[in-house]
Length: 345
Image 1 (tube, rainbow, N blue to C red):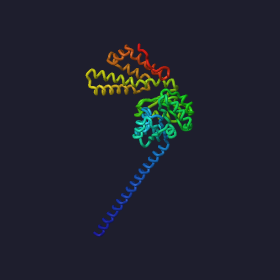
Image 2: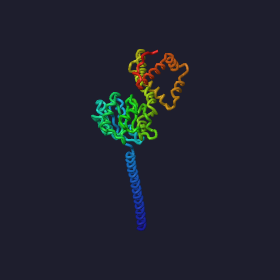
Image 3: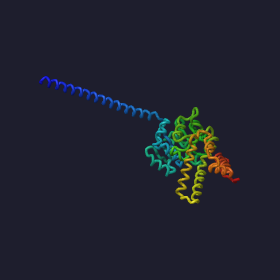
Image 4: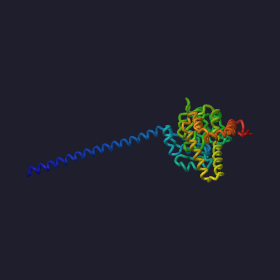
């Protein structure tokens, strides 16, 4: 009886020791796993820090703060656009803007207080920036650039100038700033760039040999860019951007026509906008294919409403009128006329 109790006690003791060993082993394994996870997390944080340190920091400045300047600054500053810049190897550091126009510069400061600074003078903007956007009226450019040059504001080693003045010429900008040829550009874009929509135009090409280290990457990250080999090509490419009002006019005409047919103004406006959006989205797919628009026209049902409407427009000379309007816009951009059409035939 005594021997049996001893054996039972010994057995229980062995079971207890075995359980304790297993528990200690599991605890050690868990600690190892926790330690490995902690190390991995620390490594990821270190890698993220290294990635941030390897990004090229952009210090952007805007001389003039109108609609387009505000749109570009907004696109650069939006937190949701940070990942696109990061994928391009870029990171926004600061944005400096001149006070005028005060309503837009103050709105930028209000929306992005941590990155936007508002200055009284263009000189202060340039001295606090590396990438400078010139966003003035054509008649203001010469005086402004002369003033900045006289004050020795430009630094050839770090400054890049991007003009959004429609009439400016790259060679003139180089002469008026004495900046290197690969540091002076002309750009055209529309306000939707603030939402990474639309497509910018840039000349000369920034991605060419001896070009700019990051300009094309930046504009691609902000929605897309087409590089124009010459100023003449850019002038022609600018013409469709001058048809934005025409497109809105067509949509307004559609809306008013529906209202005259008894449709409520709200429904007419909503339906027209959504319908045109779907058409444009369809056209945008595979738009690098130069035959995309031709294919969409070919897809129209033979004898259907769309095919007939297109033929009716052609017979009425609608597209001839478009060509004349575009020629007139180009003539104004080139400084050959005021862009007016004296007659319509």
